Image (cartoon, rainbow, N blue to C red; front, side, top):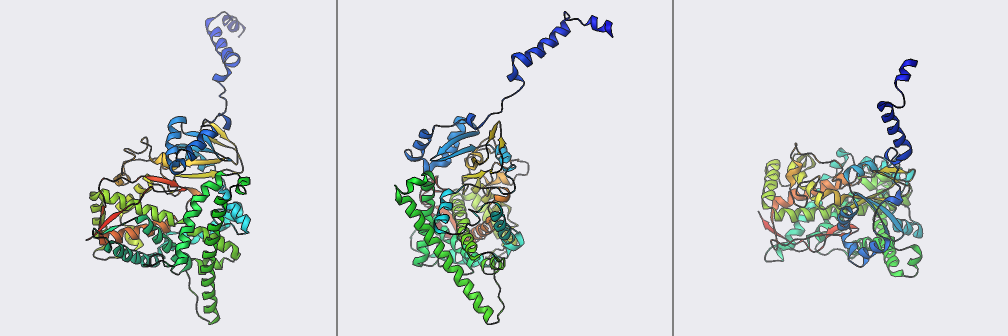
Length: 505
């Protein structure tokens, strides 16, 4: 052993090489071995003034979805920006989005929605599913999920929704009859009313007149209040609270909109509850769907019922309106796909006009069309998460707890790395079993516990409406070649009217 040690002296090339490498790695270049963990301060991004200039001086509020693409191109898949008093970290890579969502914990927070919460505290209203947090949110989610996420439960709404679809067809027929070219102007507006009537039918078990030739004044005011509230949401969140007292108009309009929305929902809820009480007093059997039976049976405070139902009225309306509008827009521009989808519907229905939930389950192209529309035009272009209980790792960065993280779904769903010809409408990409897409590249309804609770009902309503529309009408654009681009209004909406020609089949 001693002899061996003498042979391997410090003068031998092998020993010198090893020791030099070791010494260099430990003493001279520690950064080559120990990689410094990057912090929030290291995340790149524009200055606060530059970002605010993009938002308010260059039309940025309407093009927040495009700022996702620009941010990713300039700074990479992770960057930060300040929106008024709110610092947000943007994540625009499917793998990193997955990393965030898998660390969201037991009670994930979708986003702060600070102005929504401020209003509820200001007026003394209860939080609902969209604004509640922690155990309160978990309770609401569990109650609502039992009746809104289970496929069998959702199928039970088919008859109610098909009645609303029937009124939609009558409304389209009436609107097209007023134009010699059978064009219906601003179909997004028509579908918005359809979506609101549908969710109201599920929540209230009553109709509110959205699809009547003359919409009731109180319903029309409710629709206008929703639109105003969404516009004011971005403004009130961007303004520090002390500015609400100086520049009062945005906060005042915001509160007035919510006031009417809560009053509208409360009026319908109280009416339904009074109807139930009357039946009980007469010894009649009470049967109900969602609100009048299931929610009331859970014995949660009525303030919580009002808060949840008011928020749920918003949950599915824009999803339905946006998805149907963009679907008809793209189908009118792609007659070959429209023809194939019409053939699929005809083959499944076998002469029937009204589809059921079981029927749409046999329509793969229908589902592919809707998935492709939602990839191109996600209703929520940027979802969000706030991890409240711990710091998390996102790529090479450690993001502190309670940091707002924006998940840039618009950017990932239009990334050519994951979708060939990403800006083109190709539903067949979802039918090719050999094609693989990153599962987090297009998740328009979110993922996990904080995914959209109204997803299944909204999808069913869209499928039933599309199948009936294409059974009755052939779709053509009013002006072939005219393009309609999306814009951000908190949600992603058409920047101008979508006008469609409806020709009887």
